[in-house]
Image 1: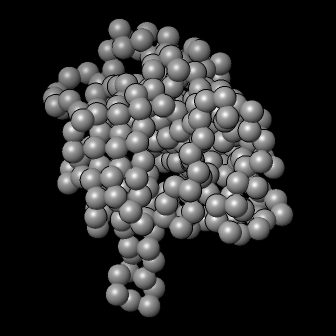
Image 2: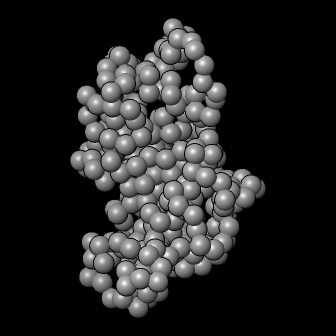
Length: 265
């Protein structure tokens, strides 16, 4: 479903602040893969997601999504193919618009705009049925401004909006980092359900090793702009945090004492 071939990206090239963020990165996701991505700060995780989303052009390499070369495709033209949820619950929605209006915007993504009623009665019922399974009471607050929702409610809504049009690829960029543990757990459960029910291909960046092991069918670890570890299947299911730390030390040559050191190094 997604192929990254020899992707390189350097910021501030030729200056004292030059930073090689991606160094000949290769990655292949099969249809239905749910890949969790871990690594220290500066490992290239968010740079990789931004490259896939088209936030900035890559210096070298090709990005192929569902058989189509999208390397030169601008960000707004990838929006119909890629859904994305950000770390900040304030992003991904229009805070001054109602819940139902935000869902209407998501449902009309990629369509031509015209002069008609923004949300029909039939659509309201459709949105109510979509919101009920979230278990957050949003089906009874469809006329509420999104900016008045809690962080967890808003992130759940953003997740629903990002997946509403069944994107070719769903990108989850540390989408639970700003939430408390209990709310983060609910949003992660919802993420699993949406990916499984809609058979989506997804990548999720996380700074929580336990979440990276527990969720998805595949785990990759990045370091210095490249993938240094790729685990799936039974090997991932039986993996422990300590084993993961030992693998990182062996592959990177950096000895670490705990997972927090690894993820913030």
